[in-house]
Length: 362
Figure 1 (cartoon, rainbow, N blue to C red):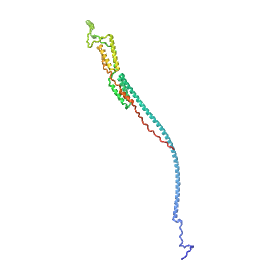
Figure 2: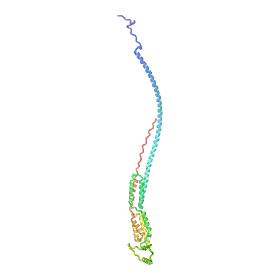
Figure 3: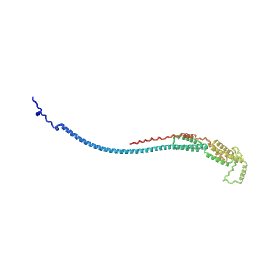
Figure 4: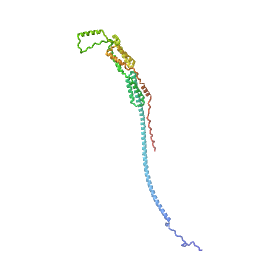
C-alpha cells in the first residue's frame, strides 16, 4: 500500500481536463443572441415609443384645435339658439295676439250676424203689421198682398232653416188673401161719385113729355092741308095724352120736393160710399137697393141716363162688400215665437297654444 503525498501533483492521468471557453458554450451563444435580440427590441421599442409620442403629440394638438373649434361652434350654436328662442318668443306673442284678434273678429261677426237677422225680422214684422192694418182699417187686399209678398221676399233672401215656420205661415196667409174676391173699392167709389154727379140731370117721371113725331129729311114739304092737320093734331095731343102704364102712377112732386128727392138720393149714395170704405156690406147693399127703387119709382125709366144709372146700381148690388178678411194672426204668432227664442251662439274652439322650449343654460 503506497502512501500518497498530497503536495505532489497528480499524474497526468489523474489530472482533470481543462474547462472549455465561454464563447464555445451554447449557453453563452444563446445568451448573446438573447442579449442582441433584447437590444434590438429595445431599440425598436424606443423608436416606436418615440413615434407614438410624436403621433400622440400631433393628435393632442389636433384634438386641441378641434376642441377649440368645437367650443367656438358650441358658442355660436348657443348664440343662434338664444336668437331663435327670442324669435320664437316674438312669434308666440304675435300668434297669441292674432288669436285674440281672431276671437274678437269671430265675436263681432256673430254679433253683426245676429243684429242683421234682428233687422231683417224687424222689417218682416213691419211688413206684416202694415198688411194687417190695411186689412183691418181700409180693407185693401191688394196693399196687404204686396206687403206680405215683400216680407216673403225678404225672408227668401237669407238662408235660415229655422225660419221655415214663419215662411209657411206667411205663405198660408198669402193663399188666403188670394182666394178672397177682388173688390176694387176705388173704382166702386168713383162710380158712386159719378152717379151722385149725374142725379141733377136725370128727369123725373112726372116731367116726361110725349115724343114728337120725327120727320124724315128727304120727304117733300107737306101741303097746306096736311100742315093744317098736323097743327090741329099737335094742339089736340097736348090736351089729351094716352099712354100704357106698366107700373103704378108716378108720384107727383112739387118742385121743392123734387129737390129734396134728389138730395136724399145723393145722401143715400154717399152713405153707400161710406159703407164701402168701412166694409159694411149690409148697409152698402141696402142703400144701393133703396137708391135703385127710388130711381124706378120717381124717375123716367125710359130715359137713357136713368137706364144707365139703374144698370150701374144693379151692378153695384153684386159687389162683394163686407167679406170676412183674415187677420194674419198665424204670421204674427210665428214671428213672435221666432223672436222670443234666442239663437244659440256657436263659437269656434280656440287652437292650442304652442309651448316654447326652455332655453338651455351654459
